[in-house]
Length: 249
Ligand code: GLP
Image 1 (spheres, rainbow, N blue to C red):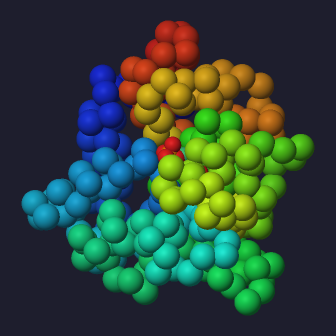
Image 2 (image 1 turned 45 degrees about the horizontal axis):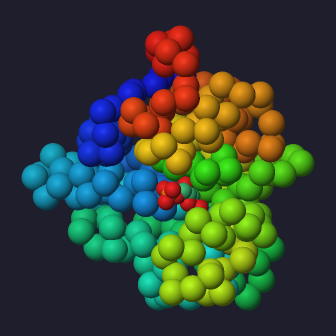
């Protein structure tokens, strides 16, 4: 594990985008695993700037997203497909046919999960998987539970997650209660995992993820055994991680 401690959110975003850009430069046809939520927005903004400056091109890149709400169409303003269009895809030269987000309105959700896994496997998993972290330690929408679920699956969102995500909807009732999420298997199969966390509200979760026991009660804790985990946090996000852990780079 390597930890970058950045002064603030802006520097965190610059660092994370720099690491992602390096991956694209090293392997122009790379597979990027992408995340949603507020945290990666600055990273995506910086990636767009790098594209506009001619430093990187996404022409050969394939993207696979972690998750999607179940029950809302891709055109919905809060769907994760819409999020990706708004914050990244519409500003860069990626081919839409190379961007993959689970379908939020599948006719058969189980089939959609199986097909998503089979597809990710067929392209050899992500070269770099970007991850945020939920306040309860979730990654993608892998919520705390009794076991790590390897496969892409339908998940009932934790009450805390619904509450946290309600800030993007007009009212709590509008927040979908279910989602499709990539499982722990595909996340762990990524060649590199880039975990980003910002702000005091993530400090507890990040501490549990990096320093606590490896347990499905904190899904992100499984990342401790990933062979190439890179953590980029700001000072507030990393405030509960002891110095000796931060130094072990
Ligand atoms: C959602 C997403 C996660 C994300 C989390 C944290 O639940 N499914 O992938 O990591 O939110 O989001 P934020 O960065 O807004 O705190």
